Image (cartoon, rainbow, N blue to C red; front, side, top):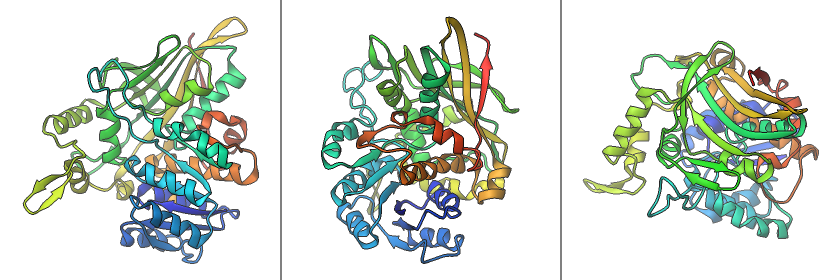
Length: 403
């Protein structure tokens, strides 16, 4: 398989590091607007012919198409902020290859009732284009990271193998990670974190459909496994809520994230000061988006691994019935930062995200997964994916919970 990887940030680097041991990966083109960053990643891979570096402006669809043609790629992997999804998605369609991302096209809040009604939902653009991909016989795999992605695979596995009836699916994410030496240092892209945390969270209910609520609403304490312990989680906008109901019959879907009071306070402050804005403003003689300035002054998550300690957990909590008896299970994956640094040279949050697309590439390459149109991870058989997770260094667990 020949892959054009758009974006050589923390997750892009981890994708390349995880994929380098896979013999079926013939070539990965490391494409980024920051050539020095792409070259930094290449230097860790020790094979410049297999991992060539190219400059790319992710806003330029024609430039992406040209790189696809130059290298004859089979798949374009989107590892950028989701603001660039449309040109990358359309470049894959026009060039004529498989597309994959880890976060879907952006939402727009309802103009009059943002905290009760949905406006443009995450991924709406991609699903509206699905029929055109089908007509062309092409596949776009949307949302195959850890969340969305692995968590969606777990939801489909629960439907197929663990439950006769599902009442509620709740994706829950929490950690006990600490970044030493910084007062505030997000472990993932702050641009994406601001986007998903300050937008109105989406909830899905059978009979009502999708609706929105206030950011950080409905706090609950969830007890995470493998020593992480109790973490307060709150509603956050996330793709699982728009993906899971399309393929998994259930009564309700939510996503809650363990942010912590300090993180929520920082995000609220950024919003009050207008520093979460994506719209450029004039600063002396330049025009810059405040959110890009925030991202520029904070430490790069890709370089925090040696300062991090602890574990992060991503998983799917399913409530329902099996053989007429109530049942609750939490299907999860815990990534330890020390282990991820030792095995892949990447910190836990980006490594836990990155193994999923590489595993997805393998299943597409072998034919275990196939399809056309725009499909979420729930559209595929979950068993081949879950059987290979331990082989990739990220085994899953299933925890029975009191019903």
